[in-house]
Amino acid sequence: MKSCFQPSLRIILWSVVGVLLISITLLLANKEEDPHGAAPDKKTSSLSFTIDSPDPPPLSMFDGLPLEAPEDLPVMVMIDNFISARPQHSGITKASLVYEALAEGGITRLMLVFPSQSISRVGPIRSARQYFVSFAEEIGGVYVHAGGAPDALQKLLNSTRLLHLDEDDRLEGDLYNFRDLRYSAPHNLFGDLSLMRRRAQERSFTSAPPLASRCFSDPAENSGEDLHDFRIVFSPDPLAYSSVEYKYDGLNDHYRRYFVHGRDLLPHTDQSSSQQVAPKNILLQFAKSHLIPGDEKERIELEIIGSGKALLLSGGKKMEAQWKKERQDSPTQYFDGQGLPLCFSPGQTWISIVDDPSFFQETLR
Image (cartoon, rainbow, N blue to C red; front, side, top):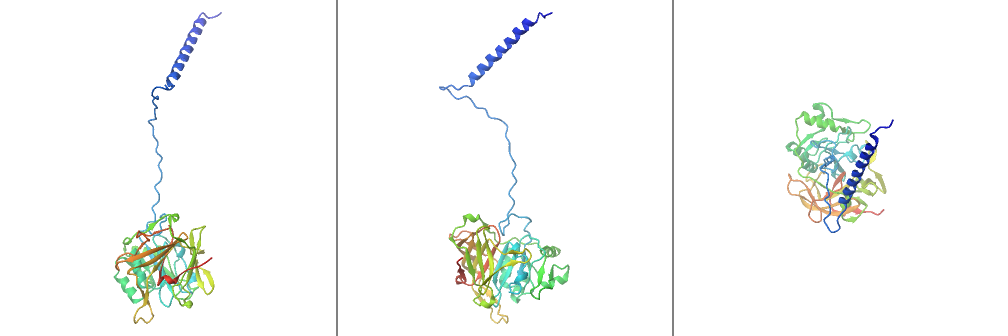
């Protein structure tokens, strides 16, 4: 039996469909733009989204690289560079900053700067010189050495910016340095940076901040003349074996360092890392050296107060520069040809104190 409601239901359904079709047609017509009228209003979403991006890591004030630890207690270590000490050089590739200057007899000495690194073997450690202490005071922190020239030791005793740890200090507490008996003294004294900092904490030493900051920039921004290979002659005495040569590695943007040994070039290798020493920047600071009058060991002094010429090798470029240090207690500042602060490529920098621009020699590949 058929329901009497079926015809009415069909009528109702078709009526609803018709109304819907008419409504959709009108809605679409209203969305069309009137070519002679104003464009329809465009509505935007009231919702907004923000994506949190991590802050960039802080950069080292010494080498411009991302910091892995606070630089609140730099350690500076005097390093032996006599020919018998070079095979056991340790820790050099990890330093943020390296100073190189003559000691006596045409031989250079190094001062490694570790703002925050913790390395268990650094050395061989040798004695202090007054001008190295002056550079260390510009930084402030722990100065590690094994004895030293009389004027250097007196300067260390009077310093308020440095805690000096001498070899004999190891007798006062836990050892932070040790002798490697595989090598002959005095070229066999090494130290542990973490234990050096622990000694400073035991003495409640707080490091003063550096006297000056450094400028770092992208290597591509370096200007100057193209120059890839060069030699630095620290002493005219060939038997001092203190001349070094640098060869630019464009693929890695650093300078591979070699010792000049007669006609041979010997790679300067770090025993601990088994890597060749290869800084990003080499800064030559030209400053005269003189024998100290009456010094039995013919020690020297450097004219590092005043101003003079400098030369920066970075990114395969050679750039003329200037240095300036007004007083003993002021920082050494470096400026480019326009008188602006000199900027370095991020990475390790060697500051080489050289007597005269003639001791810098360009070499051909």
